[in-house]
Length: 154
Image (cartoon, rainbow, N blue to C red):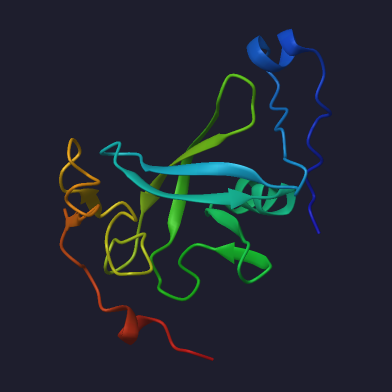
């Protein structure tokens, strides 16, 4: 259970300009979280947190998310060894999105379960003629590890 109780949201002025973290969790209890490499600024991934995972992240300084597909806390790197050490936490103006800056660790130094440094390893090939070209994606990075050798199916 969480040892952190986040402050209740107060006035718009305090939320938007004040000095107290007052995260706005959605009706589902989740808040979006963007994860960025602290050294390079590269966006590594996007996930959700709930109050428990945010509290766990703050307590351990290891990025911990809420896995919607598994319905449980997910400490990044618990299976792969590619742990994200939190170096900074930011929030947007109305505190309904989090941005964490992490030091990506582990042998592969990868954040994506598909073996890439970033989950954003593809781009739309033709931005101007996307529909005409069939919405084709192009790889923009090299795979750092083979997921079949890292993740063991239970």
